[in-house]
Amino acid sequence: MTGDDEDRRAGRRPRVLKAVGLTLVGALVAGCAAAGWAYWHLNSNIKSVDINSALGDDRPAKPTPTPTASQEAPLPTEAVNILVLGSDSRSGEENEALGGGSSTGARSDTAMVVHVDAGRTAATVVSIPRDTLVTRPSCPLESGGATAVSYGSMFNSAYAVGGPVCAVKTVESITDVRMDHYIEIDFSGFAKLVNALGGVTVTTDEDIDDDDSHLHLKAGTHHLDGKQALALARTRHGIGDGSDLGRIGLQQKLVKALLKQISSAGLLTSPAKLYSVADAVTGSLTTDTGLDSLSELTSLGESLKGLAAADVKTVTMPVVTAPSNPNRVVAKEPAASELWESLR
Image (cartoon, rainbow, N blue to C red; front, side, top):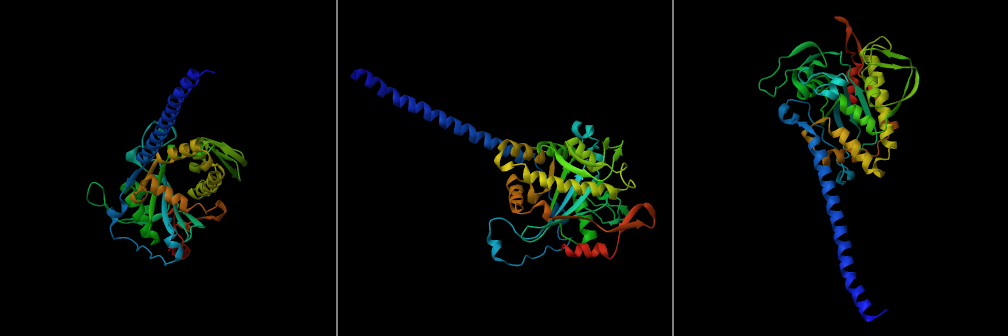
């Protein structure tokens, strides 16, 4: 090899290294841009309602946490109460195809108060039957003014007349428990979440034949896709006595099954699946303003990472048949009050 050849090769090395460097920088910039776009997209998906401002101080007091050394940790550890609603409140082709209602005819057929104990390693999920007759308090309206107090109204009418604000105020009035947060997911969002997780496995104790929800399952274990899981959450006429209590039992099975599926889905080792799940959730989510960003939702999720499905207890608010209507229920006392007292 001549000296000229060595000089030419030596001259090419800086150019090659420069090209490689520019390629790596370009890839890094593209990756950061993609990550930035993904964060912006997921963040902008979330819709929120300023429930705290709407309700002001006219609500149960927020408990003062007992000072502990763990409070200095970066993640929250105090007990928290979250009202979770499943609704058909958003119009659109996807919701219509799944049986959802219009945005003006909103209903909240699934209502759960999720209480996470201090330390966030155990939780209780309390279902409130939609057919429960309650005293619906006066609720502020976004357009101004307020709804009238209504006696002997169905629980799910609160959302219909006053949206999330009235739903929260009604729950707080019947439980005397402060709701720290509010989360609502619609039909299509629930179905997309299940699909993004790869389906969910549920065991049913009896055959289900419900033409209204289009669900027909034999008793046993089934792996359901999003549409089937949504049908299971909505079905009531094909099981038991056809009441809302039977549907609640199925919804509680789904909650446990979804928790197991989430913990076994390997989301942290699969960025693509994690993004798919996050996009499915945030795209159909309405929260209070305390959870209306990806960072706040992530913080909540990380604070619950020590919570296993086996540590989640599901119960239904104790009820009895309403004296005024055999198709409605009322809170069973003192059992209902004792349950709520345990969550304060």
